[in-house]
Image 1 (cartoon, rainbow, N blue to C red):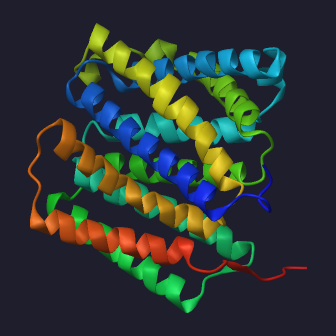
Image 2 (image 1 turned 60 degrees about the vertical axis):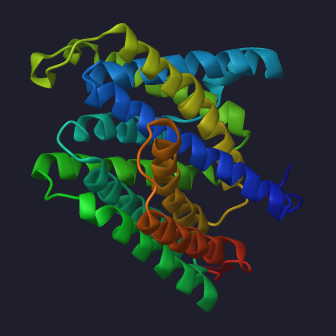
Image 3 (image 1 turned 120 degrees about the vertical axis):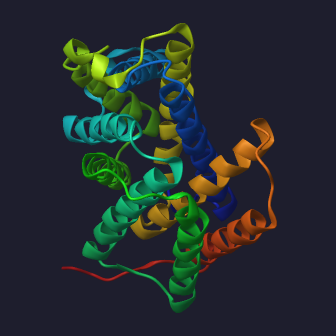
Length: 296
């Protein structure tokens, strides 16, 4: 469906599904890496290989052959995807959840908003207000749990955010979402082969266990592979700035998942700040149209 014929409801539905997948992916990564079930190199490799296999099967079923998985996508997007995934896994060894999320989403916002501004995108006054509310709410939500990060871990998470921002920006001009994501994952899995000599290093203080492998496969095949297909579908109808701001809902969704599935406490503070973030994102992404100034 073209961006012209896509309804606002469909765009919101696809974006919401993608954000839920991203939040679930973060939870899976934390469970695997925090629990020392697997080292970050192995987790990243299994994640992309399993994602590639699942997506190739999807392409065979719906597009009639696996060759399209290889011919679609491109190496630049795959490199950005691999940089995001690898640096994300490596950084979380020495970062708390709050600190990591702050650095990651700050880098994503800067990358995507800068990309939008360079292409001439602008926001209305109401959308600017929503952006301020959403960003301010995210800082208020995560800052109390944040700590001064180790320099290397902080730098890795920043690079991860830039990689994800670049991957998302490139997805806005891509073709068929399933084919493009499949091709990118196949290429990223090729990059992961280069990581094999580094898997299982003792410096990571973890072993490859069955729970770690299962978590990596779920992360790759479902919350990454299928989640990124949905994200590419949504990106066709979102400006770069709106796409970046929409991702500010991910920490809220992940925290809510912790309340539902890990019995974390539901506090009035969480409800209040989360409401501010969601209202801000709604104002920034659902009100009016992002203006694009001609650069010709």
